Amino acid sequence: MVLAELGGRISRALQQMSNATLIDEKVLAECLNEISRALLQADVQFKMVMNMQNNIKKIVNLDDLAAGHNKRKIIQQAVFNELCNMLDPGKAAFVPKKGKPNVIMFVGLQGSGKTTTCTKYAYHYQKKGWKPALVCADTFRAGAFDQLKQNATKAKIPFYGSYTETDPVKIAQEGVDTFKKENCDLIIVDTSGRHKQEASLFEEMRQVAEVSNPDLVIFVMDSSIGQAAFDQAQAFKQSVAVGAVIVTKMDGHAKGGGALSAVAATKSPVIFIGTGEHMDEFEAFETKPFVSRLLG
Ligand code: GDP
Image 1: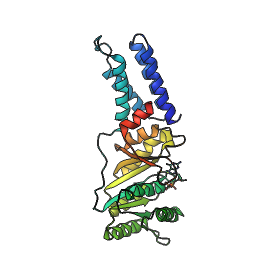
Image 2: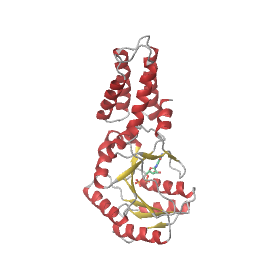
Image 3: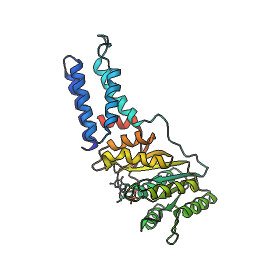
Image 4: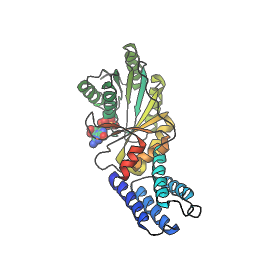
């Protein structure tokens, strides 16, 4: 089920509840069950869906609501708030400070859109007058450096990498040092992905983080990853101090549920979403407008 469909289904469930002449336990339960089914089919984790149900039931205690209360409004607001809460870990992500050498490290599985997103992120800040730079600490995937180099050249962003050096830790250290000396204020370190959550990938990531000393680690996640999102995000969080999430490929057949799970697993907010392959197909993420748009 794609994201727009999820929103449509939740809206319809709320509408149906609203149309009932009397909102009793049964009508509320039917509405919440339909919303839960929609979320589960959009790959939101079962536990999160159950939590949401319980929270709403607690808020909307029909017996306690005096006759004068507008039950429909209260239920609608509770659903809206719960969806926002699922996307809001309660703490903001690190915000880069202009004029300082902010180091931002990107992690994620191969194919998640990490390298593309590094450039999008750099380009986003460059347009606002920042001085970004890209470091390719991915020596595992053949062609990773070429890809980063191509993207960076197109956007006129300085880059650092090597065709011969095989140690990503060394490259990360040299790259970050170089750009600090050049007074870049946003030094972005792209790391290796791999297909699976292998122990060696996590060890390498830990070492790259140690020498780069990032102000922020961003976990990049493909929105179509589905139910695997929670475990995947959690595995990354356990290895490095993930502080923000970027969800890619929100165009096309994004289910969106994975984003909710990634927030829960990393206890970090989504800061941007990728909406296409091009450099400027990238949007700052804001929870309330996103949920409003979702519900139409
Ligand atoms: P990496 O292995 O994680 O570094 O992934 P890449 O950056 O190489 O991206 C993998 C593929 O996903 C490429 O074909 C990208 O063009 C594509 N991609 C990345 N972000 C997006 C996005 O937001 N939307 C779409 N449609 N494609 C994307």
